[in-house]
Amino acid sequence: MDFTLTKEQELLRDGLVKFLAARYTLEESRAAAKTGLGRQPEIWRSFAHELGILGATLPESEGGLGGGAVELMIVTEALGQALVVEPFVDTVVLGGGLLRRAGGERATTLVGEIVDGNALTAFAALEPTSGQHYDDVTTTARRDGDEWILDGSKIVVTSAPFADHLLVTARTSGERRDTDGISLFVVDLDHSNLPAGFESHDYRTVDDRRTADLTFTGLRLPADALLGGEGTAWESIAQGVDEATTAVCSEAVGLMRKVLADTVDYAKQRKQFGATIGSFQALQHRMVDMHMEVEQAVAAVYLAILTLGADPVERALAVSAAKATIARAARFVGQNAVQLHGGMGMTEELAIGHYFRRLTAVEYEFGSADQHIARYAALTNRA
Image (cartoon, rainbow, N blue to C red; front, side, top):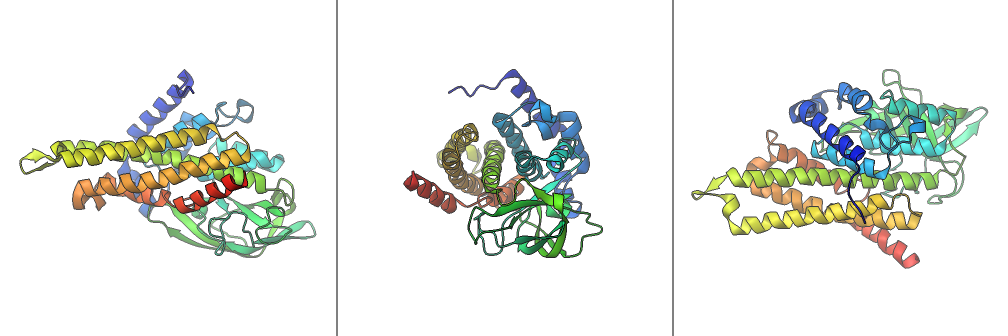
């Protein structure tokens, strides 16, 4: 199997890495995350117009660069290495993917706005009693004349505090945990004038992401708010979640590469007992173990990336294997990096503490290792 990048893919990677190194500083991004909008709009516009990465995975017929899964890996790994908080996964991977598969005039228009950098989306799917089961949907949508009425609640909706559009899963038929009967709706948001029947509790997570818990109480939506066919959204949702999970795994590889490089560099400079700590054999072994975890994570992400276009069971098996591997590696690499840096590893001034918090969040985002191991086992037994 050939993992060599094409010239075009190398250009995409090198251009993005250079851009982030020159214009995306840790200080500015943390300031925006903690005290500002939670993102940097000018960076997002540059992603769209200077780099074109918001359409990197889309065909040219839809305004993209004609890329696919490998381009997704290239972009997300680079974003992870620079600890980018912009909502690429929420908007481009989840939002763009769900909208493309839904089809129709409304969805096609929104995809174009995403590629142009004029729309941000958030995926509202998880509920207070659903855990990580995206098919456990109790939020309901019912027809009322030419409108839909939405009732229910969603939790941990990342990017919702600044999203222009919410993509909401709701049940239009069937019983709880039925995959049939799940529909997808778009809710347009003006945060200065929220619609009646919509409540949002916004907060910042440990890794400096903006998220919200949402409540819908008789929220009225126009007829064209329904994306795709009524009650037929599950296959698209399952694929979208797998794609987003793989993107986050790829991001984690970028995070871990940076953490490992910084730790090795620190070990070459920090002195103890008259010698650099990198000369101590026990710590050398620790860093070799970190390197091995990173390489295993890379291999798992490659497999997941290369099976995103496979049948649903094969895709799910590879994605769950990658997520379980990433969860273990993220914990091992992050914790050991902090230990090797000593107490200063958790300070705000040092980059390693920020990377560690993001790795900790990645460990559980889109499902923990235990949940993905259980899914892998269930799919294997069924096969």
